[in-house]
Picture 1: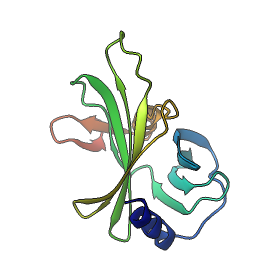
Picture 2 (picture 1 turned 180 degrees about the horizontal axis):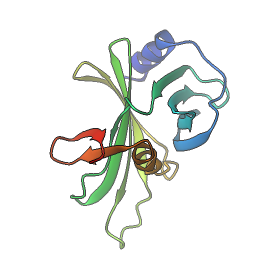
Picture 3 (picture 1 turned 45 degrees about the vertical axis):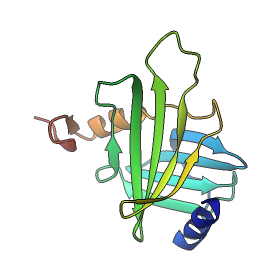
Picture 4 (picture 1 turned 180 degrees about the vertical axis):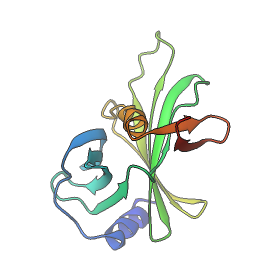
Length: 156
């Protein structure tokens, strides 16, 4: 599974310089780092060794597929997805709502080709950060989440 992901990541895009701006999510997966950064209306997804990403994808905040927590269930979770050449790189984060739990926030990256999962990598325990700033960023550009349609649109 990791071999398939590595081939997908290496073929997808050349390495680029570190993303600028504010961090919206990060975690460690073994010797590699996953980051989602925000700068000047763009979100940047980076995956690879720190300072030498194997994959960098950019998408405008207006169009990025961010799914906020729906307000139900035993855990608070969010996802953001970047698409590239038939693949979707879905970054997720989750934390249990139960205040009695000692489980740290979890997260990871799921790589899909169409509807098929080709890789599912979990963040190292305790390294996943919250992704809730993305909701505020979407709200800040005048987009509101419609719970009924599960889409972002203009605020009424």
